[in-house]
Image 1: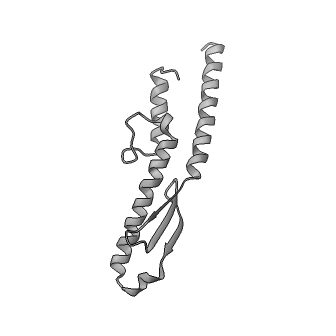
Image 2: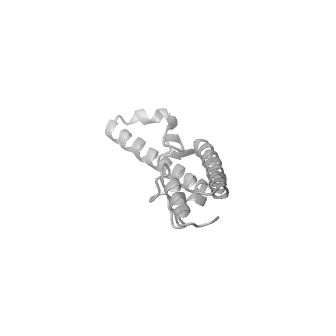
Image 3: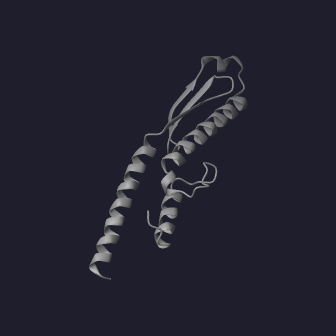
Length: 125
């Protein structure tokens, strides 16, 4: 492999690595909050699905139904996940196919796989 080709590949790798680091930082800064339909539960999650805040209104104790409470917490968490994924897909958009959606995208791997496919195909930016 000639030196100029190797230097070009190294420069492309450096650019891509810097883009990935910036995207990773932005994904880590995501905070998505969802509320339950009755507004008695609020959950804030981060870009990788970690819970940052869970708020329960004291009125949840007026109806002692642990099954209903658990269901409402899970549903609220799932809403927050969708919001966080939508924000993450927007952040990673340059590294995803044009038809990528929050429902069809794995933000842990898809941006990198798409970029590798683009590189292998010789698709210049």
